[in-house]
Length: 312
Image (cartoon, rainbow, N blue to C red; front, side):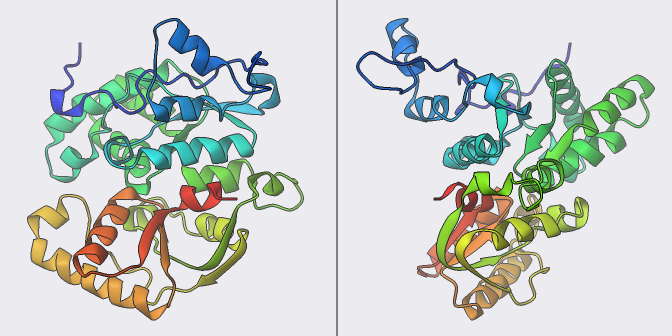
């Protein structure tokens, strides 16, 4: 039995979410889903975030496939609205979303800090949890997706049985934008599915590619294609876009002075675009950049690409 350190508790904001209710007409509420009312009447009152998500999964027969959401620690702890936006976007792309409630941290912070013995139980736990599921595993973070797809193989390479299981799981893992473009084809006019997102964001947007997503996963074309398809958005190129923002997980803790300098340069380049909004696909970068902007008293904001794609 693998002991999961208590600091990596099951993700709280999604615990108990009912992702796949069967909607039916509500006597006094038109065609709205009755799942919320039924849960409360049974004594299973849920949080507002849970009730919001219930509405986003349509009946299963309307969905092309079911995917598993691996939501990440930062979204769970600080940005639950990004998780909601993801489900909304995936539903519009014709995908039903399930959430394995036993999921915890993937182990990437410990792995990157060189704490392999601490990271290994977390990797094994994640494998056990998602082995019980079927379908693609969607992760809204290049760093966490790279960890599960590639890091687990390195972490478990000396254990043949666990390596085989890690390899099987890695084949199911996709970063959020990678899945939308390469699997669902939402930006391919020939599929017609691109119209389902219907994203609209009036004004300028500029995009920062996170290090793990760009270099670790090799994903860059996909988020750019998705942003290019957003109605009324003017995409402005970010100068020195491939430079790190300075977060780097434990890097920002171990080397705060260097991290701060990287951050200053990134904010200067962001201001050069004259865009009020910087789009990222990793919440670590989002938290780091938004914090830097606030400390400098600037009005620009940073958003996750799921938020842009969910907006109509």
